[in-house]
Image (cartoon, rainbow, N blue to C red; front, side):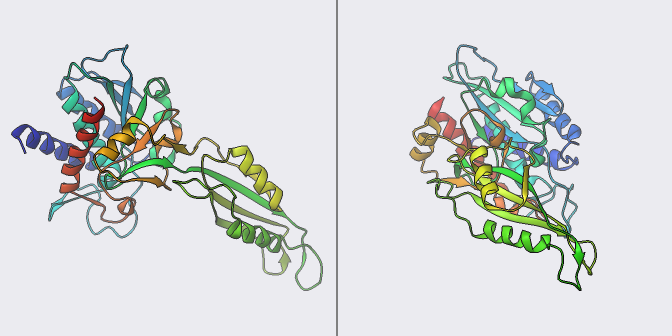
Length: 355
């Protein structure tokens, strides 16, 4: 590794430590955004901002060229119970960097930023590069990446940084959350009267547990239905007249929102109301230049069941980054330093294929 490469890697890790050191829960990312902005300023890189979102363009940006978006998020979830370490103390032990957001998605964020810096002054790129550090990803908030849609929408495609072990997600399931309410009729439990809404809801739950949609995505698999919450009844001796439950629906491109809702409503007793239809599934063509670049480099491709800001983009995208998805949102979250080093190398190799 050259001295320049060592310097970039050191600066990358140092920046991640600074980010870990400031709480950056969704909707409270102002301090983390400030860390990113101070870093860009120290590199004499101009940037734009909107809310807690920050983006910058390569030095020789050319409006006549297509652009590639390099994006990851600065927000984290709140620390869960069980931490043995300070979540905001970026400690390095046994070649692991511990801290909240180190794995999800700090390592990907700073690795993409370092990659952006690597190509920043190049004059003969085929594509422009736009680096964007965005907010509210963990809650799919409306003040996150959607706030810079005029920037993202003008790009040819995007690389989204999330912990994937540097495998490339070429498809991602969407999410639709359903509020369901079954109505029965109240009565006294001691008498044979009323219509038990909980029993009616149980029929619905059984349907959600067992129904198989006919269409299956070759990369993502089938639509996944999960009844994740349920509430009914007021006291032990009253037949419940209402029962409410919530369904988590992981969607695939083969079905539109309207098609899914029609099938579900035709098969259950509950009144179904979707909370949001913003988080759509995505899939990039297997012949796309980034997929071909991954193929050439021997990078494994897969379909992702977990959600990211890909769901809010209207351009083709892939998801790839250092770290492991299973470590996200866990106590004593960490990233291996080697994973960051490998991530830097692979991001550059990927872009070398297209730039």
